Image (tube, rainbow, N blue to C red):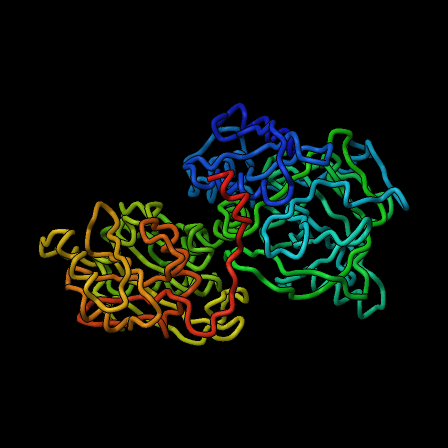
Length: 557
C-alpha cells in the first residue's frame, strides 16, 4: 500500500461504515473541525472525505486515523485485527523485517510542478481549526531533512506549520527532537536547513514519522512488507515518496517567523516553543491531489497516531524486561491525553507481593508522559473508562505505601498544563489488584441527597450502572477537597472533583479533567482507605481550552 488513496480504498472495502463522504459545501474555517468533533461522539469515529471545500479545488481527508481498526489497516495485510494489542504485535514483528525503500525516477507526485512566483501555499485548503489558533495550520505534514553532521541519516517528523503567506510557513519544533538538533547544526554552520514536507503520505509512513526514530522510510517499508518508492526533489537533495499527494520543498531559514498559538494534544492552546521560518521554493503534487489534515486538540486521531507506535515499543519492553510474564492488557486511553495508563496482570501472578508496583515503575521509567498508572486484575475491560474507575475504587485500599505510591518532582511532559514547572510533574502508582470491596446497599437517591447537602457541591454523578464506589462531584472553587471527602459516605471510595465546564455524566470528560488538571502530590487527599482527586483548575490557572464559534457549533450539534 504505497499511497493515501489506496488506504482510503482499503477502508471502503474492509470497514465501509468507518468512512463518511461529505459532498455538501463546507467552510475550511472551523466547519471541518465541527464535523470531526461530531464524528468523535460516534463509537466508530469514521474518517471523513470533504469533496466540496468552499473556495478550493482539492478535497480534504480528515480523521482517517481516528479508530484502532483503521490503524490496523494501515500496516500489514488487509485484515481488520483485534484492537490495539494486535497493532502492537504487528508493529513489533515488523521491526524484525529488513525491507529497504527503492529509488525511482518519477511518480504521480511529479504531475504538477510550481516553482518561483508560481508557489502559492494559500491555494491549499489548509483548515482553520479553532478560534484561538494563530492561523491555518498544516497538521499532517511530514517534514524530512538530513542530519548536517551525517548526511546519510534522514529523519521525518511532525511539526505544526502555519501558513503565513504564499511562500512562508511558521514552524515550532516543540519536541526538541531530531529536527531541532538538525537545525541547530545548520545554524552552527551558518546555513539554512533543506527540508521537504510530505502531505498525503502512505499511512505506514505517517505512523513511522510519529515513532520518534530515524530511518522512517525503512520502517514504513518494513511495516507494509514492500519497498517504499522514493523520488528526488526538484530544489533540495532529499528523497520523498513518489506516490504522495503533495510535496513542499524549501528551507528552514535562520531568521524567525511568526508562529502560534495553536491547539495541542492536551486540549489546550499552546504558545510557540521555537519560532522558525520556512521559505517554500517549490510545490509538486498529483493532478487530483487530496489534502490530508490530522485533527489537533485531544482528538482520538491525534492521540492514536502519536501514541500507538511508542506504546507498541513500551509494551514489548515491559514483556521482555520482567522476569515473569504477567502482562495481559495495556492501554493509554485517548481521553487521558498520554498522561494515564491502565494495565492488567495475570490473576494468579498479580497476587505476588510488589509485582504490580514493579510493572508500574518500569512503565513510568519508559514513558515520561504518564503520571497516573493503575494496575488491575486480568479480565478487567480497561477500554471501559467508567468500569475501570469503578474497579480501581473497589480494589485499591488508597493508602500511601500500600495501594498507592506518590512520586514528586519527576521529569514530565512540557505541555502538561497542571505542572508546577514546565517539564516537571508528580506521578502516582495505583495498585488495584486487591480483593473487591462491598458497599452498604444505600440507594443512589439517598447517596445523592447526602452529597448535595455538602457546601459548594453543585452536582454529583455515579458511573458504571450507578455504583457509588466512584463518585464524580461538580463543585465550586470554595469547596475544600478534604471537606468533601469527610462529608461523603464510606460507600464513595474514589472521588473526583471537577469544574463546572466538565460533563460529570461523561466518563471521558472526567478522565480528561483528572489527566490535565491535577497533580498527584498536591491534588490528592487520603482518608480512611479512601481517596479524592481534586481536578479543578487552581487559582491562577492560565491554560485556555480550544473552542469553536457558537454559530458553527449550533449547526453541528
